Image (tube, rainbow, N blue to C red; front, side, top):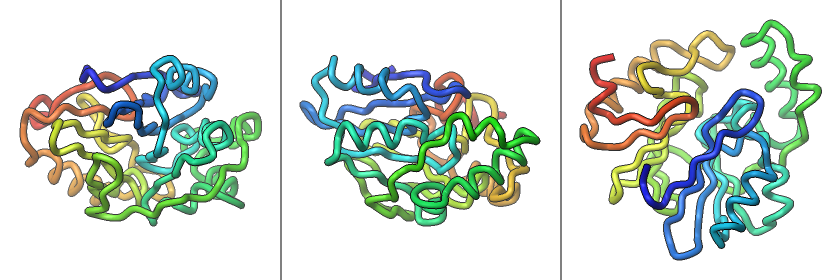
Length: 212
């Protein structure tokens, strides 16, 4: 694990939430899936001022603590790809329920968890720069799935695009298997020593995933 990365397991579906320090006290929170108290406690314990909430995509299990973080840190900027902005803000529960019903066969699970989230502050697209990261648009799991790449440190946060020996589902309403294959091919030609921090499961490297 890179020295500037704090790893937390967050929310009911065990999302990897990453806190990424990039200056003395500045940080980004990537995919705060839930357990806001845990995330806030880690930020305070490490004397970090979170500048961004960076969302690799908009599914409910990756955004569960967004509202609480925005309340605790009003200055924090929520950043998401333009194609996934529909998953947050007013009326986002409609598309969230559609996705959850397709994934689980029932959307009642969301009723217990859902809190309306603020809309985005920053719309991202291919090549956007936010904090230390360059955005790579990797559609497939959702139309707006993205990876956050710190070129200098060779760290890549892949959300549900790339896991250790796997990748995210492509049978959901906003998914596309052909786009996923193209996105994975794009990642696999990156430098082999890039460290991969996925949305679920263990960390890996580009080299380790090329053969899977």
